[in-house]
Image: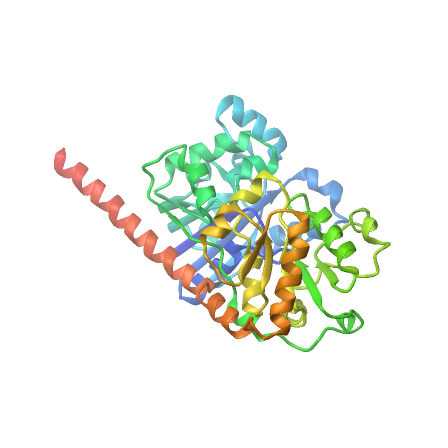
Length: 400
């Protein structure tokens, strides 16, 4: 099949997201895959000194030269969403998509032999209306978050409504995310498919990183984005109440965020580390942390790090949400407030010291959530949607 993604995150940047894993696995299954991510715009030229912006411009330019079964890159839009969104709200016309130029979408698809697309997967609402340029036999909307709440941009909700009404099906990463988009149209075929894990990568581990050797054990580790969805106050409270535990944070983090921890000798902000090296850090920790804040988007999150932690054999102490409770994973220890976080971390470490928690059993549980199995599920779901669409066309011809 020719499979195309229009995604929110570019491949090769600081974050590896679900569409990247699915694209890789689908390509490995023999499908031709084109992965496009959120367009850069002329406004981004003002930020060219920032590496992610420079990398995205480079991908846009180099995508003209890419060949093969797995192609990824960034398009160029002349109008940023901050402007295009306001126009879209008033007129229903999305200049963010319609102003894409050189190479424009049609020429890009022709160049890479994607004039006919068997499956189009959309997880970036900014691309609403892109189906005008693409002859896709099956369109699946794949929401991964409560986008409007996460961005504070209610125009995104209007875009989601239009995408849902045109999609053949939906694949949501959690039940709350699915319910959020089903309010636009309840009769769209839909499934919940949680974010998975590149199991072979995270289960292998590696030698202990040099910078960890000087950090005392036990080590409680968090790996991921350091933004408003992370409860930094909870991390600080844990570090203050348990000075015997090293609290480690790995992820892009400005100095202003880590500064309040500077007086604590057991809090370590290591900054961003390459995806390829993350398993080594996890395998030399004692437990993993997922301290979710009160941000509304957290209620529907399907954190990839959940099964990445588990593939490394780590028990996880996590802020309770209905979605994570629903999964019934034995390796999760839930808390509701800062005091309970400290209690649960202590309890998990005690159980680990008494050999009551099996890291191998945790790895086995994570192995069931491989991205390969998720890719196979996507293919099967799209096959059923195609059959349904073909049946409707046949019925329509007969009735005429």
